[in-house]
Image (tube, rainbow, N blue to C red):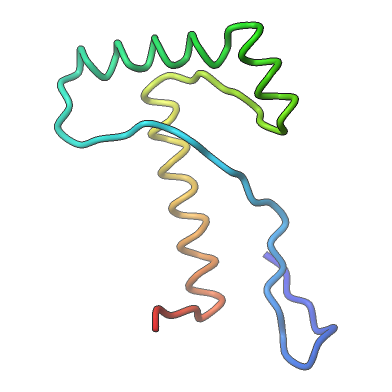
Length: 91
């Protein structure tokens, strides 16, 4: 993370922000999670759907359940650091 002093106070500069869409839920039986993952991944990576999503600025990825979980953990860690360093608080 970088800070910029081009304004009257230091400003946190964030180099990368991703938009992520996914389906998550606690307590869903593994066979249903696996079926949902296969079905949704198949849909978003189907040629016509993928092209349409890409034309709207999306980068469709049909990943595995463990890969998506790892992505969410990494993003939570990254944004926790941003919040901590920025001093942001809920008012």
